[in-house]
Amino acid sequence: MPTLLDYRRRVRSVKNTQQITRAMKFVAAAKLRRAQEGVFAARPYAREILRVLRSAAARMENISHPLLVRRGEDKILVLVLTGDRSLAGAFNSNVIRRASEFMREHSSKKLELMVVGKKARDTFRKRGLEFVGEYLDVSAKVEFSKAKEISTKIADLYISGEVDAVYAVYNEFKNVMVQNLTVQKLLPIDPEVVNREKKDGEKSLASHAGPDSSLPMERAPRGDEFLVDYIYEQAVDEIFKALMPRYLETEIFRILLESAAAEHAARMTAMDAATRNASELIDKLTLQMNKIRQAGITKEIIEIVSGAASAMS
Amino acid sequence: MLPEAIELQVVTPERHVLSENVQALEMPGKDGYLGILPGHAPLITLLGIGTLTYHKGGQTGYLSVINGFAEVLPDRVIVLAEISERAEEIDVARSRASLQNAQAEAAKPGMPEAESRGAEAKIERANARLQTASKGGNARSTQDFQRSGR
Image 1 (spheres, each protein chain N blue to C red):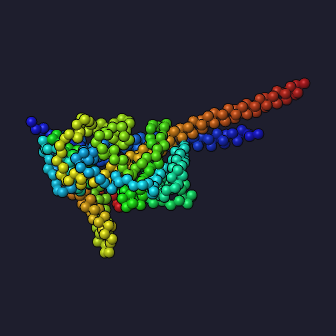
Image 2: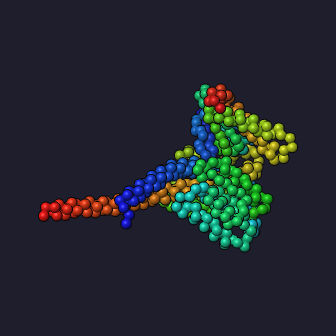
Image 3: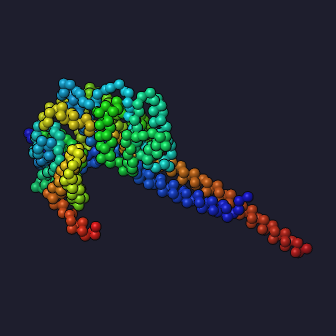
């Protein structure tokens, strides 16, 4: 039977763990807030890119771009986004499981793998897989230059014909409690994106749920945005050509931000639960400890009383 | 009637850099600088690398702009730059260091073309930043650098 001292030690150790989980929860909350701000801050830029892209496309006779070209999907690039650290609940393992599933479904094709985050890299490396690209230390502070780097690499692979399609597997940030595991096709870009007829409803930065930025860009009436007769300083197709990669960059930037926000949210939730569990454990252990202490005291009193009784008689 | 001011918005993917009502501005178009006054015809242009200058009630502001594009409307200009900083935000010491690095890189003989072009782009960016900073009177330069003991 554990002694009083054993209980004291255990309570102390659980308390220490609780302090750590609590601190991690606060850190995750701060990072989550920053990631969320990033998601909102990225929206106006993406929305404008899309708007100008469409208005340029509306003026072109033949819309063609290497990133829009469709080929038979024989070679597929899978972009897997995880975090760099664990202790984020099921966040990392969910993504990795979904990515593995996806690769099994497409095992008849030639698959290439690109990873973001140490967790994905380590897991897939253990399985003996090779990567066309790996990007670490992204989620702590998502920077646009990282998105650009990844996007350039992906676009190069696609345009050179080394891959025929690019899919991203990542956690989409819904809210603090919910992350949506998503498989999204990045390339070829859906021609509907640049199609001016279909303005709303598609999944892109421009139409994402959540509080919108307060930028007065919204002021342009939605309906007539293509009616403005712009002068194009450069030829329309040159502008279009310059904007397509920018669109891909903003999409990847969004995915990086979503994944980072989801990771921090998952960690925050996990650490919150851990802190609560520690509290419960401490309560239970303290109760046990007090019972033993009480039993000890009772025993001592009985000893004194019975000792006194025998001395009297 | 012509509008009296232009609402200037400068946005990058990471943040909203500037929002001001200005009387005039010049920005680095891909094929040369563009001067914009209120009532300009609607225009869309790609941006190059350089300094965006805006004039507001006798005051002048400077921003570095690196790639992107701009949409001009009679009473509004939206600049969507990949990177943009106000003159006073520019880290002069860092830009100078990256300029020197890039120059050293570009001077190396026998470089593959892609890399030397990359170095040239870096030089151009660093130069644009430094010019913007000096125009904006950002003098946090070598003295600070030395004073901080590095």
